[in-house]
Length: 451
Image 1 (cartoon, rainbow, N blue to C red):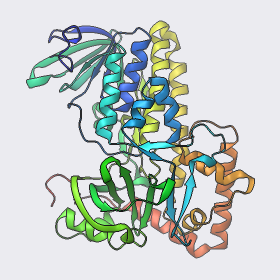
Image 2 (image 1 turned 60 degrees about the horizontal axis):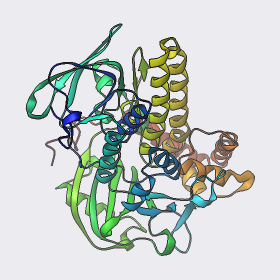
Image 3 (image 1 turned 180 degrees about the vertical axis):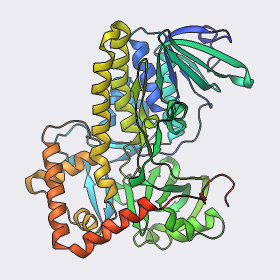
């Protein structure tokens, strides 16, 4: 097995080698963790099962990630590969048919923009950055099983060409994403009953952007049983995806391409932006993909990013959660390697931090299609600076408090008051969530082998 790029001094033979940290998964979470630990002087192996560049969905970044990219030393490079994103827009009864949540209007301005990026380019950039920081990076290397005991971590798997490999490390960071290496092995992975959904997505040409300075916005459209994203990418490409429940998918007939094109043409506001839409690549589907792991850390291991949990991506928080957890994880692992007695206390803090961030955004996700939430998002008001707190959340400010938390809690009270005033709409939202929780993807119409 040889390191990516065939650099001789970065090779890992089949015989077990000793590392301080084994990081499994070369996406944003794993690459960032490996970079930060290597900068501490740790001996780090970053193992990626495929080879960069490889396609991955999740192209829309958040402003709060830009300072993290700066800390990793890649901010300018990330901006060069992307399209400037100044905000997000949602349907509304306005002359233009939508309202914009502008990232310049956050409660605590940190960065007024983000970028939309081809994830293959971003992930490769971060992976190479980890190697430049001193981590050993290997590709085409799948870790299949790990054993963790008092002596440390022993991992076994397959390298390029199927050759067996064995790795020993003092600590394991599971950044395997949706593969959830430890989640599967330890039986920790659970489907998220309140976020059951599937996705069908592709890259398009022939779809118009917004006008002026907001041409790089992500646009969100609602459908009866879910929502649609529209993300501008470089080269005139538009990433468009449908996230929905089983109800919508059961109505599908024919091929995926025709189904997606037909559905997009029925969405008010989006249909007008379709000039001559054509799918030019990456038509893919995934089944029920929201989940969480019941534990995210244990003796000599922890999970970062999507390996721990993944919820409906409507607010584009995935990469930011991955990066934030990577920074926390690198601090934790470094401290524990130096002083093992700190592990339990630091892991408790890590668990609280990660769950709090996801909980902040999950409440909004669960109610996004409810009639009351549609009204509030279509008619934003900044009383008590609540709109600025909402924009802060949309910008990725999921972990700081500083006046955001109590304003979001006040928004929940406002939401409740509107529910009381509109009982019919409130009950419709509750029925919608209960129906989604009861439905299951069996058989999954988007599973491999489905039309």
